[in-house]
Image 1 (spheres, one colour):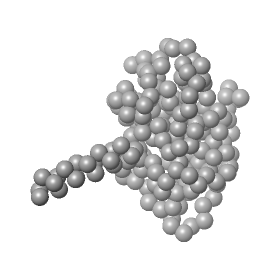
Image 2 (cartoon, rainbow, N blue to C red; image 1 turned 90 degrees about the horizontal axis):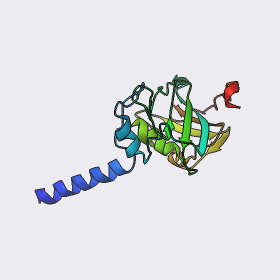
Image 3 (tube, one colour; image 1 turned 30 degrees about the vertical axis):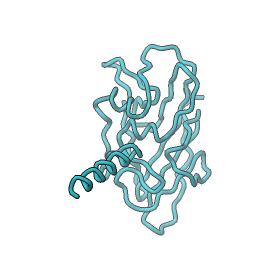
Length: 180
């Protein structure tokens, strides 16, 4: 009986890990991972440092918790010192997520969160508690936010509010001129 219970527990752990909810961190700030290659691999991404790019897009991500901004760390999936750049990465804390790939394919917000090692699901961001409301380019998004495709010059807003509170869409991001 114990062996069967242990096998069931191990099976459940495998399902949880595979669902992208491997590390339900507590409240932010959530640091950038230090093992860039392992996190990129966990997200199905490759190191493209120095490769020719067929795709180069930028998506802006905001996360707010009770009206307070949550910082998206710089250098998620990127290190000039290590000469490493995953296909999805950040350079700074602006919230701009870079997608750079030698091939054109679909990249998702779920992959970015897997790389960051922060859980994301239909009703949660990391360890934040409350109602999650999602907007993509100012329009409500009702599906699982993990499936949001990262597209050029789009804005993704993840807003966590107290349960029952009316969420407010953050203002549009003012893209720096070099991105237009």
